[in-house]
Structures are given as C-alpha cells and as structure tokens.
Image 1 (cartoon, helix red, strand yellow):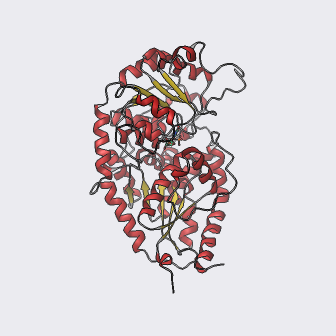
Image 2 (cartoon, protein in one colour):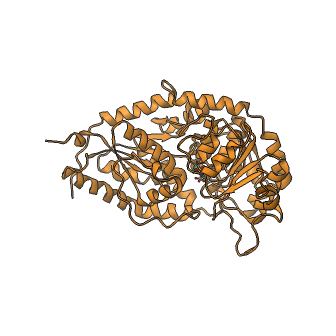
Image 3 (cartoon, helix red, strand yellow):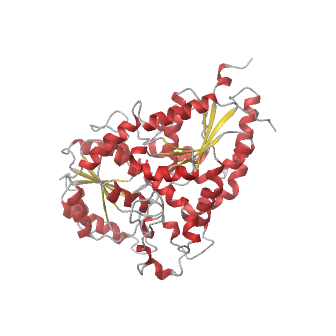
Length: 479
Ligand code: UDP
C-alpha cells in the first residue's frame, strides 16, 4: 500500500546556479512545502552557496534537499557566460539523470513520484527533457516582465538588423540611443541602450545572444507555463505582450520575505547592521549594495565613497570581497580614498558602516533605510519596491538596464546614474532621492496587495498549486 507520503505531489525545482535565481526559487520551495507538497531542490552548488550567504535557517523546511556534500567553491563573482554555456551543454543529461534517480527512489517507496517540474528560464533546456519524460513543466524566469519582453524581441532585433552591432564604435557613437517604437508592450521611447546588454555585441555567434534567443524561441514555448516574480499592477503592459506569445504566463510576485517597516526582527543575521540601523532616524540612511555578481574598478569605488561622504546622509555600504576588480592596478593600495575611513567610517560618528554581505531584505525593511543605491538586479529591485524604498540606479549588465529604465521612467521610484558617475553626480542623486519616497511608498502598498489574500499574485499562485495538486502523476519508469 502506498504510504501517505507517496501520494503527495512531488515538485522538482531546478534553479540556475546564481544567488539572484536561488533566492526566488527557495521562496517558491517554501511556499510549496507549506502546502505539503514534496519538494526536491536542485543543486548541491546552490545549496552550499545559499547556506553560506543566508545561514541554515534559509533552507529549513525545504523538503527533499540532498545531504550536504562538498562545499561549492565559488563565492566569487561568477562567469555568467561560462555557466550559461556549460549548463546548456551538459545540463540536459544531468536533468535526465536526476529525474531518473528520483524515479528509482519512488519505485522503492522512498519519495513520491515526480509529478511537476519548475525549471529556471535560464535552464530552459530542461523543459525538453522533462516533457519527453511526460512531466508537466513550468519555466520560472527570475527577471522582470520588461526584461523577458526585451529578450523575446531579440529575434526581431536581429531580423531588423539592429543586432549584432556593425562595429564597436556603435557602443559610443550614439547608436544605442536609437528609439524603438515597434516593441509592443514596452514603455514609449525605449532605446537600444535600455535593452539587455547582451545585444551589445558585434559577433553574430555571441554565446549570450544566441542562448537567450534559444530560451525564448525554443524553450519557453515548449513549457506548460511561465512564472514571473512580478505582479500585474506593476508590469501589466509587458505581461500582456508576453502573453500574446506565451499565453500561460503568470505573475506570482513579489516574492519578498516581508514588506513591513520596523526594527529588524528575530530573523536578523547581521547584528552589526541591525544595531547600527537602530541608532538612526527614520528614512535617514542610504543603503548601497550591488548584488552578488557586479564588479567595479577602484576608481569607481572612490567616486561612490566621495559622493556618499559629500551627500552627508549616513550610509550602510556592502562591498563584497570580490567586488573590486582592477586588472593588476592598485594592488596593495587602500581601496578607499585617503582619510575616508578615519573621517567617515571609523570615527565613531556613525556616518558610515561597511560590511561584506548583509541580510538585504532586513535592511530594506528597516525603518531607518531611506534610499537604495543598487545595480537594479531584479530581486533587489523587487525587494526595494516591496519595502517602499526609492532607488539610486546604477545598472551593471543584462536586463538591469531595462529595470533601471522602468524604475526611473515608468514607476517613478528611481534616479538613474551614469555608468561612470562621478562624486558630484552621486552626491546630487543621493540628495534628490532622500526624503522623496511617496511613489515608492505607494508601490509598496500595491506590492503588498498583490500577494495578500485575494490579490492577483496570490490568486495566480493558488491556481498553480491547484494545478500541481490536481495533475495526473506520470509513472516514471526506473531504468
Ligand atoms: N543579497 C543579500 N545580501 C547582500 C547582497 C545580495 O541578501 O549583501 C540578496 C538580495 O537580497 C537579492 C539577491 O541577493 O535577493 C541578489 O539578487 P539580484 O537579482 O538583486 O542581483 P544579482 O546578485 O543576481 O546580480
């Protein structure tokens, strides 16, 4: 007789191995687990990285995790090109092996049969394997709807001759300022430079350009549905345009841990940040963090430092140990401008706190945080919107430039800074954003409503759960 566990729907989650992908997948895993679904969360690399960044509590409750093995060796910034190329080449075999192994375990009564797969849009190749095995499969694109819409138009950009670029001068001669009025669903006046930076190539065989087009043209249409960590009230036009091509696209975000404003709660993991923030007035602090991948040169760090110091607001600045990359230059020299640490950070004045990593959502949710200097990664953007914190946008790569454009032009919650922003620009942007968070506060209320009972994203998530629960469980023949 089947054990009660054997009758549970079994969902396999396959996130792409990068922090910004693991976080929303883990939230989905927790939501599924809370509904008593059996969850397998792949992979070991992800688990080790997550445990080290967020602590053991981050994965508690996610059923079916593989036992810890060797720690992943990378905390360093990741070579996204190499990972994309390698996962696309070797991934299908791994996905098949994983599902077959789970099939053997199910046959032995260890786990329920795999009944549903949610794979990362960046691992879209998985859909062909799992569908062939008869398993319903959704793709979860962890970026914005505006970002996905831009990626869906890469084929048109190629067909219309915009991409690849004729030569490298196109990067600097104003070519990227060309406006595109034909992209249905995009904000008016969108320019080439607002589209994901993977179009900035002169090589028709560019890895990211081609992988992205495969994900959009081959993988996404083969999936049973598409999930996005956004909400209808935020990106309705982009979502409608995506649905014209991928009808079963549902917005289930923002998947934020919390959106309240108050002192850091018991989940806090960085006592230093919490204590420091507690000592500041409401909305007084600028929080600067460029995510898990961004790198910048020493000169740019210096400009941010001087700009933050000149603006006068207290700041909490996260500099990952691997964030600053200057090929050979400046080795052995101090990272920060002379006198900066003594005057601003170490003086006991409380003006600045610098750490290597923090619990970002806790910081954004703290009443003292008044602005977020960000690279506009989608998780950071969504977490900022959910917390009602206005942004200083310094996009680094990929669809971060698209997110920046939307944050500044469409949602009115951000101020854009140039890639080579100098200290004066940084100072001016801080002064402009601090204290002007009305639109961000309104966005926070909209975001909270979307995930509250009866809200659009909550209803979409409920119908996804119903689909998973009601789905016929295919029998996976053990090999
Ligand atoms: N994050 C964090 N602490 C840090 C830096 C990042 O908790 O010091 C989390 C952040 O909350 C977000 C994710 O890591 O959920 C970064 O994802 P995002 O899409 O913003 O950027 P990426 O790292 O992919 O560039």
